[in-house]
Length: 119
Length: 106
Image 1 (spheres, chains in turn brown, red):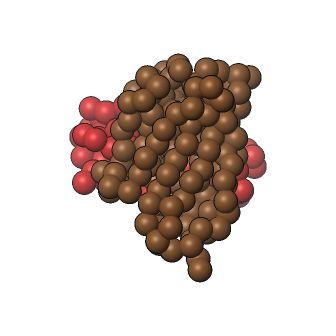
Image 2 (image 1 turned 90 degrees about the horizontal axis):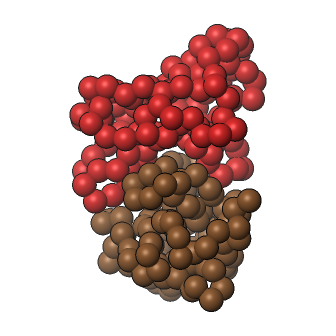
């Protein structure tokens, strides 16, 4: 059974960097496409980006200048860094797996972690 | 940028059929995925690639996609189907999610 778990600080100051990690169990991080998606309170879903083939990435153009997604194969984890955050980055952040490859549906999701940007 | 438009809310009587639309330019040429999200929970995919149902998802959920509209159909609606529903497609260089529809079962 594949499971994903997000970890990281729940509070980040404006202008700083948001850092989250997703730990994968039941599947190898070397396989598949792994993604970050966020949801501001009371709002809809926004795709942040994917990582695949260990180091290849796709990013949402609207966030691309501030985002880095990387993978740690030794711990079967992948991570998100979002730089220069503002209050608009306050959201529940989810990590997810694509079911069958590029552009496919997200079939497994983590439970999500709330990140608040505030001083 | 590509936009997906969904009705804000849909109401359905218990046991009846709910249809949730997702409008987008030539969406019929794209693969559409649908998610169900209950309060405080992560989304769950209920339909992928227009009309395919993941294992464990009730056969009461079905999907179609043609022209400028994709549709998620919930047959024989149950109280447990109350949730927000989102459509999703890939366009050019980004994933796009619909605006979301709140389904209420009366």
